[in-house]
Image (cartoon, rainbow, N blue to C red):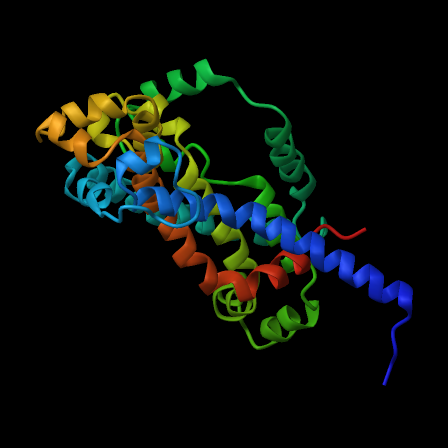
Length: 295
């Protein structure tokens, strides 16, 4: 048995305390938001709600679920994530695979690598971006939310480095058996790439789910807002949304206020991330480390 010195024990105790404090700073605000969403507006307005609900009520969640705008925005966000992550994965795989080859195997590798690195450092600007979307007739459509950033270069680099770390003998053996590059990619490499694909897929999902700016920029009709754009308008115009809901305004205010309504809808917007992450968490560390840039 290996015994730890006093210094090692003190170091471990300090580490445990710091990790617990960091976890609490992340978890307690979430718990406070959840408690507010289930509390009566009178307790929330008087500042009596901390980590447990008071005057338990589900009125805020009933309003969120019955409010057509929230459900519509939620479905748009789901559609965006499905299309966006699928396009991102396809483009990252088909881009990272040739770039993982040596210059001898792919003569234009350095040119394309420099091209993608340039896009990470420089952009055309907001106005040209909007003009381009307008000229392509993509405004007010779901494609304006998924096509502009179809190749996330930083995630593609993670995937590319993962491919470069694979033993070259795998592809050589497949080529000897008569397999081409496409067959090697689909039948051999993709099953091996599960940890890295789960990692970059999670990054893409989180980006598409959390982004609100593109929806506000490219969507002229509020009915086409994705969820995060709708929540952003909710934070600034909650009373207007209550008036437009079709229900009795003063009756709603007696059962919920801005804080409880916002907390409920914000928490509902967080649920998909909490649901997806546990399924990919086991791949996350492996994919990130194996695909990282190594010196």
